Image (cartoon, rainbow, N blue to C red):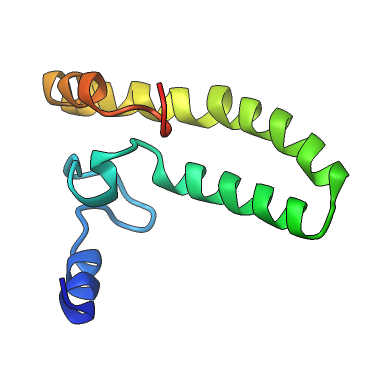
Length: 101
Protein backbone atom coordinates (compact mmCIF):
# COMPACT_ATOMS: atom_id res chain seq x y z
CA UNK A 1 0.00 0.00 0.00
CA UNK A 2 1.45 3.33 -0.98
CA UNK A 3 1.35 6.31 1.40
CA UNK A 4 -1.20 8.04 -0.81
CA UNK A 5 -3.56 5.07 -0.87
CA UNK A 6 -3.19 4.65 2.90
CA UNK A 7 -4.06 8.32 3.42
CA UNK A 8 -7.03 8.02 1.09
CA UNK A 9 -8.25 4.91 2.85
CA UNK A 10 -8.00 6.66 6.22
CA UNK A 11 -9.76 9.75 4.88
CA UNK A 12 -12.86 7.79 3.88
CA UNK A 13 -13.31 5.83 7.10
CA UNK A 14 -17.02 5.28 7.78
CA UNK A 15 -17.19 7.37 10.94
CA UNK A 16 -17.46 11.05 11.52
CA UNK A 17 -15.57 13.06 14.10
CA UNK A 18 -18.57 13.54 16.37
CA UNK A 19 -21.27 11.55 14.63
CA UNK A 20 -22.57 8.03 14.84
CA UNK A 21 -20.70 5.02 13.50
CA UNK A 22 -21.98 4.17 10.02
CA UNK A 23 -20.06 0.95 9.19
CA UNK A 24 -18.20 -1.83 10.96
CA UNK A 25 -14.49 -1.66 10.12
CA UNK A 26 -12.84 -5.09 10.27
CA UNK A 27 -9.82 -4.68 7.98
CA UNK A 28 -6.31 -3.39 8.56
CA UNK A 29 -5.25 -3.23 12.20
CA UNK A 30 -8.83 -4.08 13.22
CA UNK A 31 -8.14 -7.66 12.06
CA UNK A 32 -5.69 -8.02 14.98
CA UNK A 33 -7.42 -6.09 17.77
CA UNK A 34 -10.80 -4.46 18.27
CA UNK A 35 -9.20 -1.54 20.15
CA UNK A 36 -5.95 -0.56 18.43
CA UNK A 37 -5.94 3.01 19.76
CA UNK A 38 -6.21 1.92 23.40
CA UNK A 39 -3.57 -0.79 22.92
CA UNK A 40 -1.19 1.60 21.17
CA UNK A 41 -1.53 4.36 23.74
CA UNK A 42 -1.06 1.92 26.63
CA UNK A 43 2.06 0.40 25.07
CA UNK A 44 3.45 3.86 24.27
CA UNK A 45 2.89 5.08 27.82
CA UNK A 46 4.57 1.96 29.22
CA UNK A 47 7.52 2.58 26.90
CA UNK A 48 7.82 6.22 27.98
CA UNK A 49 7.59 5.21 31.62
CA UNK A 50 10.34 2.62 31.19
CA UNK A 51 12.65 4.85 29.13
CA UNK A 52 12.45 7.73 31.59
CA UNK A 53 12.25 5.52 34.72
CA UNK A 54 8.86 6.94 35.71
CA UNK A 55 7.72 4.36 38.23
CA UNK A 56 4.71 6.45 39.19
CA UNK A 57 3.49 6.38 35.59
CA UNK A 58 3.70 2.58 35.46
CA UNK A 59 1.69 2.42 38.67
CA UNK A 60 -1.00 4.74 37.26
CA UNK A 61 -1.27 2.92 33.94
CA UNK A 62 -2.81 -0.17 35.55
CA UNK A 63 -5.83 1.53 37.17
CA UNK A 64 -6.20 3.76 34.11
CA UNK A 65 -6.50 0.69 31.89
CA UNK A 66 -9.03 -0.89 34.25
CA UNK A 67 -11.13 2.29 34.24
CA UNK A 68 -10.83 2.55 30.45
CA UNK A 69 -11.95 -1.06 30.07
CA UNK A 70 -15.07 -0.74 32.21
CA UNK A 71 -16.03 2.88 31.55
CA UNK A 72 -15.33 3.07 27.82
CA UNK A 73 -14.58 -0.21 26.04
CA UNK A 74 -17.49 -2.21 27.46
CA UNK A 75 -19.91 0.62 26.65
CA UNK A 76 -18.54 0.95 23.12
CA UNK A 77 -18.92 -2.78 22.55
CA UNK A 78 -22.49 -2.71 23.80
CA UNK A 79 -23.25 0.17 21.42
CA UNK A 80 -21.61 -1.61 18.47
CA UNK A 81 -23.42 -4.86 19.21
CA UNK A 82 -26.73 -3.02 19.26
CA UNK A 83 -25.88 -1.14 16.07
CA UNK A 84 -24.43 -3.99 13.98
CA UNK A 85 -25.97 -7.06 15.64
CA UNK A 86 -24.81 -10.44 14.37
CA UNK A 87 -22.00 -8.99 12.24
CA UNK A 88 -20.37 -7.49 15.35
CA UNK A 89 -20.90 -10.68 17.38
CA UNK A 90 -19.08 -12.69 14.68
CA UNK A 91 -16.30 -10.07 14.65
CA UNK A 92 -16.00 -10.33 18.46
CA UNK A 93 -15.62 -14.10 18.21
CA UNK A 94 -12.68 -13.97 15.81
CA UNK A 95 -10.80 -10.81 16.88
CA UNK A 96 -9.44 -10.28 20.42
CA UNK A 97 -10.51 -7.20 22.37
CA UNK A 98 -6.90 -6.21 22.96
CA UNK A 99 -3.91 -8.14 21.62
CA UNK A 100 -4.56 -11.32 23.57
CA UNK A 101 -7.91 -12.50 24.84
